[in-house]
Length: 212
Image (cartoon, helix red, strand yellow):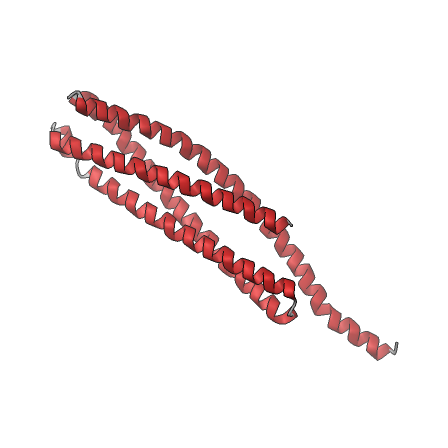
């Protein structure tokens, strides 16, 4: 082969080799990030399961104290309920921020895949771009849903906090309303844990697919 032809072949091959190297590095980085995310999901869900069981006990004790007309016992347990509510609101706010960060990463990955697909024109790059669009839709949906749960839990927490002075004065109607809000908050905690488990399962499935 003439030397000029050899040079041209090498020059034409360089962009593909560069993209292949970039793709390998990016895939390795994404795999590490995915594994960290799975580990974080596991830790979140283990902790949320324990805290949900704890809050269920608090709510049951609060209900019994209200039913048996034991205002001192009610106030003692309610102090723990309020602390748990504040903790859960803060934690789901962190989840919402994390979900937003993951959606941002997915948006960046999609942009990179689209650029590569437009340059190489390879079918596999087109498929990867399609998969990244799906991942972005999933991450954006998770962010929206997590934010909605955070806002609802914060709303319940605000209404419950407004009842604390009347409860301290022994107002029975405030105690009844506070119990209703505690049960509503408990329902939101259950929804949040169920959603987190579904998201963790989806993340595991995506990681297996990426590894293939």
